[in-house]
Length: 441
Picture 1 (cartoon, one colour):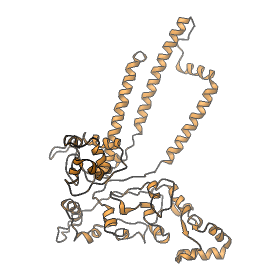
Picture 2: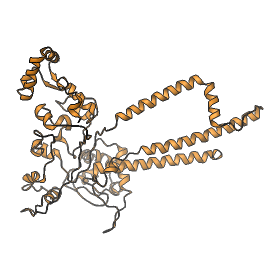
Picture 3: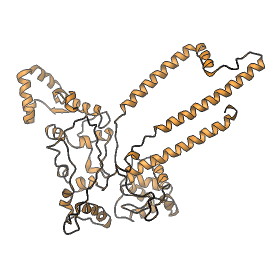
Picture 4: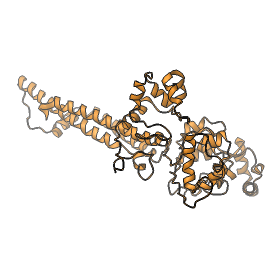
């Protein structure tokens, strides 16, 4: 192995390049299924056109260099700067969603993955196009590629051994030339012990730094368990909140009708959708095609119900651990929390629902500014600490729940109550919002 050092190095470099390519394609697959699969397929036209070979199509059509990347980020900006992109924008009546958060590398990885997909033969059992679901792609969307780092570590370790072997041979050659006796059969462990003893101060400091680094890395890794910011699973039917809640001004509670009186906000049944879509079937062919999926689920043939309904299997977005208790009505009705504090401004959400990162939530006017990742325990208890239940005495809320707490504090511990009001507000934490049993079974 040591005599073929160059071959080992070239082989290791080739392997790393291959691993990097594999990682990029895996990333592209995950991004395609979370961002694109709702409207696009590799080999079939749907709401959007098929994407297989789309880069070559744009290039041969005369598109400017980099125009397709700009199109994915913001199709309007691309159409304004490139005649070819402007022509593409008029092919279909539906406007494409903008993805300003995707980098050029991520967009390229999506196209690279799409171009590797093989079209299934008609009637065959080969790979099929279509949006990912929790049953067939959920595990792939959440794939963990940490094993690649393990393989890379093994490769680097092998390289280190190879370099060590070369070093030993060179050292033996120098000692032989200088007439110095060497112990030919000394093992790596013996050599290391001899070297470590000679440099014990540096070895001790290095070992301390290494241990502290491993501890910090381990603690940070544990802190990332359960963090699902920006999680956005694909859905069986496209639902743009920006159209329903934004353009049409539909109140959140019309669809999520149990949010003020139940633990769960609930998902609307297809009958709620049909209250409007019996009369509204879309202004163009693309919209009519989307609404047709609602009709199919409701068993509606355009004039009457056929009784042949089909359930809509939505993929859950905001998933809490089983041991965590959360009550929507307690927060919305009693606490007066606006939906945008946790879910963001849905009036501008063009894509399907997602877990909005805390940085985006903090930009919304009226939201309590927090620092911990969304849906984590730190995020919840920080909000309980910062959120004021009342700006002044609790009876100012005119709510039976807080009126009762107000009376009990005044009758039992007026000094504590006055202490709560020193900062001009009564927080959730001061009323027991940090007690473990409030949120955990």
